[in-house]
Amino acid sequence: VQTICLILTKSINRQQRFQREAAAAALSEFVRYRFV
Image (cartoon, rainbow, N blue to C red; front, side):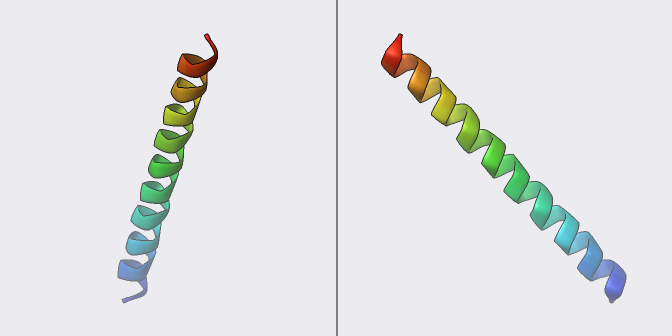
């Protein structure tokens, strides 16, 4: 059970990191498009 929780936590963290990176990339694209 602990292993399953660990795997779930890791995948959730990976998803959150991916979403954060995607949001940061979209934001930088938006800023570049707006100010260039």
